[in-house]
Length: 395
Ligand code: PEP
Ligand code: MN
Image (cartoon, rainbow, N blue to C red):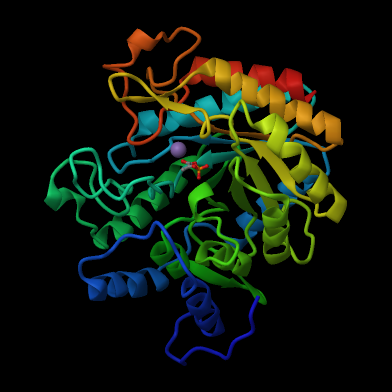
């Protein structure tokens, strides 16, 4: 990226500080308006002095595993809540989500194919939103790292202290993950620039994002000249970018030039979320354009985000039939172009929820067990059904 002079001597990141400042000075959407910017700056400074939540060695370990996925030797699953909450940081919830992620990985890989596991966990606290206000006219909930879901004006005010709570919760979640039976990595959407940029750390000659192993850019913040792409261009973590139905081959090639100039296998994951009806038409030209460049990317299907609908009673839901249809069309596009389908990115939970429709959950069941803080998640049986279909389609 751009080469800049060193930052001031007091900058804890040294030259990284100047690069970070240049990246985050680019246009950025979906950022909170902190009522007191000086308090936000004080929190940023505090975070910049704290230890990274993940180590450069762990990040490098994941990078090596994803290189195997890019070469077609393995698969990958990302899975977890749409929005983690501070209240959800319980042993039961975390264990249930991790067990569900394992079940999905085991079914997807079968006996023969290794599956890399990345939990949407230990940092998935910031949410991009379609509207700045909710149905009641209050500032919208932007995730526990920004404000509270409680529907009062005071609760919805953006509070920078929440970034410190998110850091502490992420640390404790990672502690639990590290005691589990599998090597599971943590990933989240690198949305909140104040938090993400404050946790960038040195590693050798470069820098890494210390907030999680895998960081991705969402559909709403993937502007090729924007701050999010620039920030993830600075760090050595494996990174992802969501591709909605409007993504063009030219845009995707611009991301790859910025994020993967050295063509490192598995450095970039392209996460396709185009919708059951549109993926067959929109994806093949992008697959072909990327294949022609030779960038060794990981492809993933997120078959949930473009298949969201709202019920008559105002609940967001997803129909399993459309989710499965997107997985099938996604796999068919890869077969046609000759690319490796890579894996799945799912919103799922081990909790006994009724949020998505299909399998044992009928539309009339959405009610008491609708518990998500943001988007509807697959329950365990539904997630395993998607994994089984993908295993069949990707084989
Ligand atoms: C998400 O993963 O929760 C999300 C907001 O996805 P997208 O950026 O694809 O809409
Ligand atoms: Mn979501």
